[in-house]
Image 1 (tube, one colour):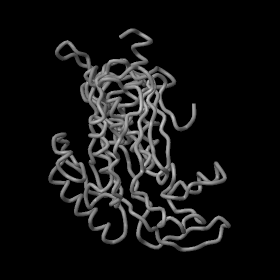
Image 2 (cartoon, rainbow, N blue to C red; image 1 turned 90 degrees about the horizontal axis):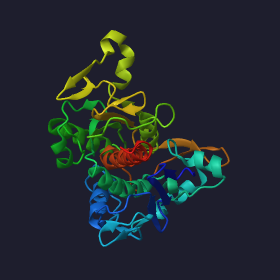
Image 3 (cartoon, rainbow, N blue to C red; image 1 turned 120 degrees about the vertical axis):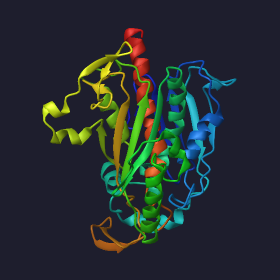
Length: 356
């Protein structure tokens, strides 16, 4: 399987470059009979698209999705679902000077080292633009998961050193930062505006919650649920770290301090404190899955930077074009999509293996 596909049963393949004619996805393995409309997919894409506020990139893409196949009379057919999103506001002129140099913090050099050539326009396939195709596919995964009573949501819980102190799901879509803490959201927005005015950018942390996930998903050794989720989320370009539950904080504790006894409440066995974030031994416990993503500051900034050209000669340059001063608000729906894609794949694998 190529590096453009993910999944064993619910398989998602994305295609296209940032400044090409279109991007899109093919979703194969979706069960038949799932109610699905173009509007349901569009709703998720509208959350990711640029130009939503002053804290995101001003690129004016509408991200209008077309369903090319796999859906008839409002229901999935069980055949491959083709999704197409045409690029309508690509301006390649700002990237002309980048053809002969490698931008710091970007995938330019890696792609050149691997393929011997690259599409320098907006980063080509390495651009965050590609994630729109993931969100479209994730919208389908979410529809399947709803039938199993599984829901995925995420929010920005940190921007720079400003951290949310509460997680109120209803607040996430009420502010441009997508923060679950309304008070801290205002501080985060002010910080993003400040670094934007300075021509700079800022990183942050996103927290993902998966609710209603049944116990038993994942494999004992390879294809552990946490490993697959981690790989999928680390596959988002700006994500540099992933932790589950208590994560790195557990490294500072004694075993007695990190102990998490099982209890039985209402006839259901679960971990008392859920310190593992809903996954133990690579298999879901039935507790809420909690994941945090470390998101780096956007590498494209309006300040002078040092690099080298194709000949290895040093030079200074300033990135032109339209970029996000903080990518966290737009990664929130991408993180949800990737989590949903992995979860639905494991749900279908579990059904095939055990019949449950």
